[in-house]
Image 1 (cartoon, rainbow, N blue to C red):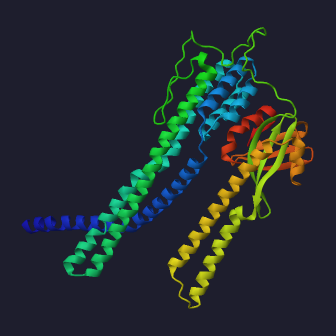
Image 2: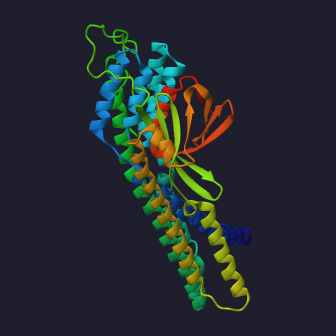
Image 3: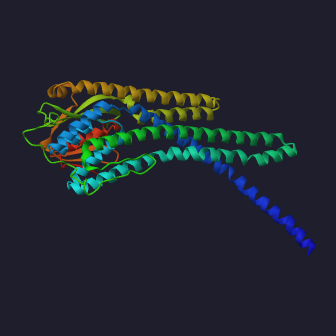
Length: 435
């Protein structure tokens, strides 16, 4: 009996120790793979963060003026004109998204009671979208150091065993893995933390602007009370405060001086910037909305702005270097990395220079007459509103127009022009659909 107890006392701890050691050792390579995925994801998030930072702009004075003008337009019982005014003058993607959805609510739910409830739900949905966008970087910031610590501790066991056996090579190799995983995990976590922190501040600012616009537009309805990016949007309205979202028209004898003026046929309603792929060329276009129709005008275009060309160049260069190495010529791997980095930098420079030229040309086109725009480039064309039967906008923001002659591809809407889609809805009521 004593021998059995002694055997069990020795065997059970030994089995448990071997089990834990086997599990932790087998987790090393999955942890390393996860760390590679995390550092790649953090770099992608950093790229999206820099792109978003580059496109963010905010003009509070202009936004406030446009909101006051839109409120006066609402009081004149012209919600379409109000949303078109706001869409041209507000900034940042979530504010654009709020106005775009708000215009859709007015078309889908004209009843004031339903519209008021849907406005509260819209504010909550925007808040949830902000939180969802922050989840990726927050996840990387939290789990990156955790997996880095796991990658540090797992190789320490074999390293200590190698040290006790005098195997310096085993000790060195495991320490390299331990320190390397620590660095990768901390770097991924640092990038994720920085991106999440700055975006949280941005989105709180955007939510503040959204609430401010709501108060200006519907301040008498008691719809908005407060929100936060990390919390929920609170709505408070009582039976005594319940009013119609669209106020009654003002008396004709006392018009508001800020009422939106309906433009003439020669006036410019707005500009939607699009990107249209044509053969090997990537073309930036300006869809100019007038009172009578829309004009698609080429703002900039070049083969150098086509991502397919640069991807093909990278593949060709890498294939050539691999073929040379197989042929016996020793090309250092660092040179290949440097060549790929130079190609990527050249691609980014080409893209940004093309966008800058397109923005400058769009401003120049905005100051020209319609006939001059059509004569400026042979590819420019005009489509009267009377010929447009349907406008479709898909989830990738691609626009195509159905006319009597068939479908016309207008290209993908740039993110900075999402707010101007409200002008398109106002110009073509009932004919613009999202698919």
